[in-house]
Image (tube, rainbow, N blue to C red; front, top):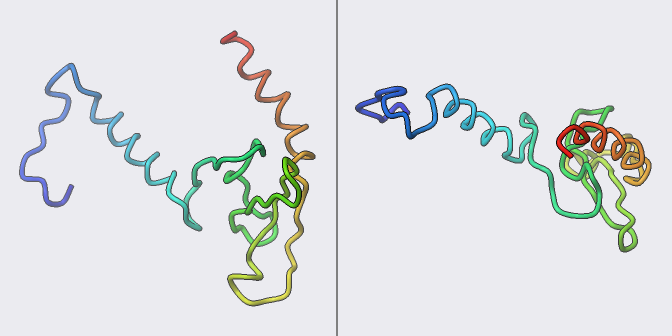
Length: 111
């Protein structure tokens, strides 16, 4: 934006509003993978893959599949910082069983 020479906000009705544009830009920034962003959901069978943050250190949790269709969320802090593992992991199925009914309840009005 700092290189733009002209900016006419909300000039043409066929385009999104300036406020929506800024909201979209912020969402794109938050979808990037980084320690200070929310990140985007990742592929796999785990419902919360790519969305969990470690409650101990605040890093994003990583999903691994110890067996096919058995995801396990764990923190990789000890790999990054070369320390002893101190952050706990959790089987994704435990979280999914609590989250799935909430998601379905939220989507129910749209059904």
